[in-house]
Amino acid sequence: MSCKSLIFLFLIILGILLICAPVEAKKISKNRYCTIDPEDRRIARKNPHTLFALNLVKNPMYQIEETDKETARKNLDSNFTLGLLQNPNYIVDEGDREFIKNNPNIDFAEQVSQKPGYKITDEDEKYLRNNLHTKLSLGLIKNPGFTVSVSDKDFARNNPESNFAGEIARLERYKIEKADKEILYKYPKSKFANGLVRNPRYRIEKEDKSFVRNNINESITAILTQFSTYQIEEEDKKIARSNVNSNFASGLILNPGYKIESADKELAEKNLSSSFASKSCLNKSHKTGFRDKKFIRKNLKSDFVALLTIDHEYKIEKEDKKIARNNPYTRFAEGLIQNPNYDLELKDKKVARKNPASNFAYGLSIKLLQCGIQIK
Image: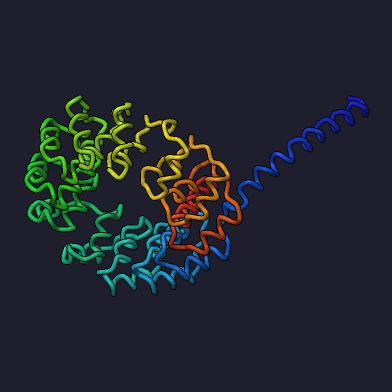
């Protein structure tokens, strides 16, 4: 290749780079506020009981420092502590082990002992069998290293109201038998029943369908009706639409096989505060097009509206951002800022920092959490 040809090729490549550069710069600029700053960390530590703190510190982008562990132990029942323990960067050390050993009945003990990084020792196994009702024991049960024994199953069945029964019944390692379902139907409000329906091994049977239709307000009904194997019939839709605030309705409308119809949309409009309305927005077949801006902006505190504004189909305008920033304690603000099409600005962080306990701040922390997951 001649010298002139090489120069010509170089100029072409340089031109392409110059054209692409502004686009890439714009892309980076667009996300520059999707980061965790020292000021964010300070606000979280200063306001440990806020939802802002919860979501900020559990963000994968949040690098844990010793100061954070100290803050957590001084504020054991705070959202800060809860979030910190959910951070994948949290490493259980000997200090944690010693601390929960001396404080077995606090939530912190339960959270730490269930982490995969907490290796169960023979001493832990012995403690668990002799202290079934402590928070530390509940955490050990949730630990991936825990194995279910025959005596554990017997205890759970004989004590369905215990926390131990509820936690052990939901484990995939717990093999469900006929005796377990009999206990479920007999004690549907028990912790054992609520744990069992969350067990990955649970399978829907004819008896389950009959049970939920006759017990529409039981909490386990909301779980059972969501199963993809629950075959939806017209009778089920009729029951749900006639009982919009029932657990049956809130569960059924989240079933993958439930297709949203015009009748459901009309029912939601008339019953905005119902669980049927709020859950209908989460159904994948739901479309937001039937809602106009005026309706949404007049119902800023509605859970239903929050779910509509968070949807990527909602077209965000400057007026929406203005309303959200001026009304930070509304569900509208909480949903809007989480919308995938909402581009964060410095003024958003300022609003959140001035109102750390607001819906807006909570929504912002969720937005940052999503950024952390994407970056990871």
